[in-house]
Image: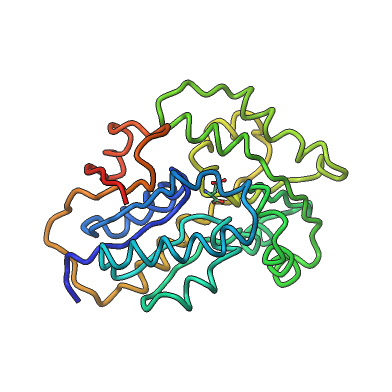
Length: 263
Ligand code: DGL
């Protein structure tokens, strides 16, 4: 194993940074390539067929170019739809990101859990299976919010995000039948932990479950016997389109990403 072989993170946009951050805490010297499919963003509005063909093809190109040791699909939409396709197309370990319904069920006292994701994620049978396996005695209220995805992108691009805007994009989940009894919310889109501060201010009485730290532990475990560089090196962010709204370089630097490339 080449110590410089990176971990590849993949998302439609900035969401995967919420998985990269806890991974860097555990593996500070890990070389990182972060791919944002800016040409395909937002995934939440795409069809299952589009995601299932697009994601494995892009990951194939990224793996060929950057020779990662492991790939992380740091996106719930892509993982709940295309994880199996990607695993069968690639010859390396692939870690997915799926809604953290199990830890939410362990936490909820009211037994009413909100699953906040993209429109595409919340309609996946994968979510039904997680609910049936780990939260059979809970009521699961799902809400797909493209507005929150846009707010997270805008925040990292340097815009001022109001708590009111975050509240308005999330409120329908609490207004759904039984929604007033939600005490635990699964952040089932990797963009949403980036808004945790605003969500906490808008709805302070509920607990939020972010799968990121658990995924970071899984990455560290899978690579536990592998060599790393002696020093942290600057990571690379790769976009699939040449233009569009992008996170600030100063923000990316906080995640160790210093070099920009286009696929
Ligand atoms: N970050 C993504 C997720 O976890 C997708 C957001 C989008 O592109 O709609 O689902």
